[in-house]
Length: 244
Image: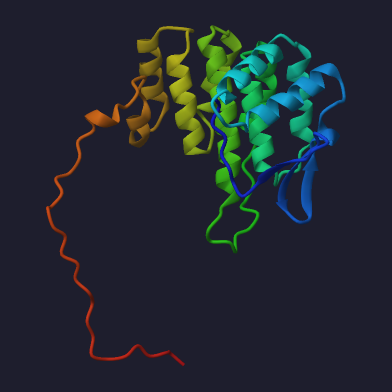
């Protein structure tokens, strides 16, 4: 099942099948307001619910829902329209919609995915909150969109490959990295030629992420750790003073 990032946003399902995503007491999104009351709209609504499911048969139900959704051409346009209606602060719901667009594997979704991936990342909405940075949430949403474009490039969609090539110039490092990975895993073009193209295009200090090989964590060298740790406490004979 697709991985969704939970960022202080909660999905609340009610008995009447209406759902709300809540950031705080004053900011809610009613699913009924962003999804049409049509057969395909209801399929999308049910799919979003199942994407948050759990249990032994959750994955089976999710995959079946995905199969049903892929058979509906209108699903792309419903998801794209819904994304534009959701308030900015509803990061979870926005990412759920992009994840659904990504999983459709539809060339019709490319324009929306590329638009989302290319959106400027706004400044942190709550700079006074040291434990949360909304720029990270916004980045996650864009990375999900880049993943969707990468899947289309893997499916041999030429325009998706071109979109990834342009995203390599994005200002955000994480987006550049994801675009490079997708560009190199694309079914379009010669991989070695692309590698050389990227070495010429990307600054030398960023060449470390130009690779089409996945890192096997088991093969990464780990430093030798001592058997015992000696923790030294800082000792002082004077008490701390408050500067007046």
